Image (cartoon, rainbow over all chains, first blue to last red; front, top):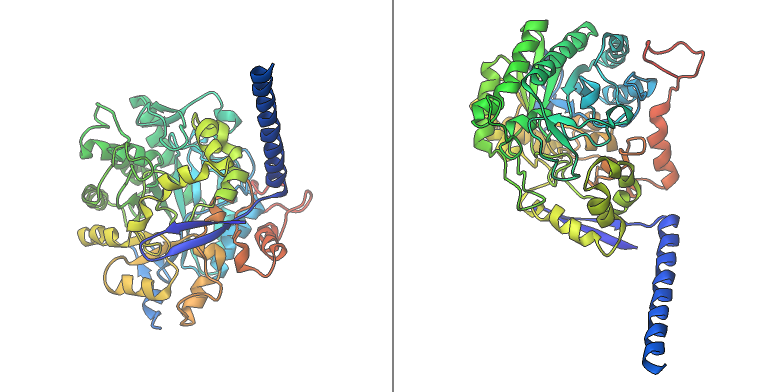
Length: 51
Length: 452
């Protein structure tokens, strides 16, 4: 859980930045998708280099 | 703590309010899609009256369907709305509070136009898009301006027939009147644009039309900015009107016969300074999608920035960059004094007021005659009673997180800061109190607009 800070003339407001179950699911999905894309790119590069 | 001065009556020419505390305009989407009212709105307004507030300034009440900011806000665009508002007034009066209706038109700043407005642009002084969401705009013709003037006059007549104690013209926060007044927005080259006098002309015509329609003895106040700071988010935008121009506008408003001035700030709503405080990125991620399709920058700029954690700092840097020069409580108080010094009619100020000591000092030292409070009264409906008891702050004060602001796009308006409650369930229960007492089909309606 991260924080959001707002600096004003007299004080700094601090608030939590929360994640809903949907946010957490989408985060996991995006991370997996990024890893898969990365692996595919690496595989293509390896094929091109060593084929 | 000497809060006594806050509880002295405030006398306008045709209206006396029992103390110096006004509930500033704030609302949720309580009503029916067609703008007829519901019991929830009566409950909402009555909860503040019960808390000891002197007068309630209604939510944004559109004078025309094309000028609403969101669907499900009660309107005053036709005579069949009068009985509903009469019922709101009756309920508020039971608690010795006055009710002032804020007559409003969104202009181009129409956050969710609704199905009726899908194929038109917001009517404005300009063809230029709104700078924040990219909401499309169309410059009103002179005939359309004359129609707009008439809508306001007719709305004032309906308000008076409903027993409303007075009306306020919402000429701040970037809505239609600001779009004419502000040099940062108005780019017309006819008699409604150019010089300050010309930019004031639309507001002048509306004030005169209302007086002609309902008489000069009906309470009329005008809410204006103390400054626009139209470039608060994006530095490449024009700055808009400085305080000196609003001092002149305040003088003209008094000359035109209005009975009070309500001072705020900012040429958009929301604006980095109004409401003062934070801008919660998690709530923006959850609820901004509801209005993302309303403007050209909705999806491709704002929603993308709000949705992806890595991009949020970009938006928040722009949003927060001017805040460090201003306080939270009394954000426009210093500039308000310049307007108050220039006029002799009562002046209200809004912008984060919560501490009794600051409000009392502002009244004693001539910054304003009273304050209008929105979000801190959502957190504590009985804020007036708390201040009257001599306390400076409530036990659980408003934290200025502005979660209420973002939730209002999609959810019932209320305090959504869980830190103020023992549990999330307790917080949600309090938010839902607005639906009690409910209205069921078959029960006598609160009014013809009471709706089921």
